[in-house]
Length: 181
Image 1 (cartoon, one colour):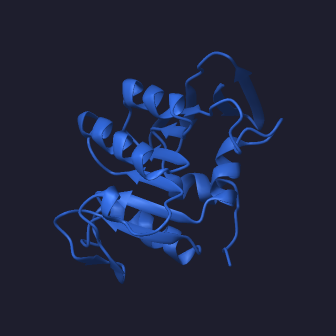
Image 2: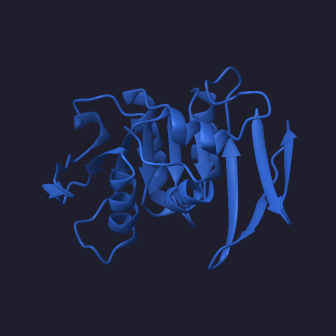
């Protein structure tokens, strides 16, 4: 099932079976796309799939996480870590980020990964998605400005939930999800 959401003047529209691009205004327009596979644990009747992902997932592997505090990947990951999520840096150019060991590839991570949060250019997404499928991730999240329709479809077909062109920090704040245990 492909779900698109549109938040406008307090109304939330959900469309099943077709893809709907969501127009949101933050500091810039966001064109979020969400694809939830049939039978997914994130496919609750009438539920917000983003809230489901954020509530049910604990370990977030961040591909492209930088140790530079000025980079968006660092700021977003630091926020999610403070919110109680397990952040797993994945960057071959880093050894440690946010006090966590960094791994060169998703396949090198020795623990379970729930969400793969991607801070890479759109053309670099397909191999990351293939790795996410191989390691058994539950979801792939492409940050603001990152979309790759072919990779997203491949992930969805493999049973992963997919979020494109959305900031996990913004979506977490928007839903008022508290600090995790």
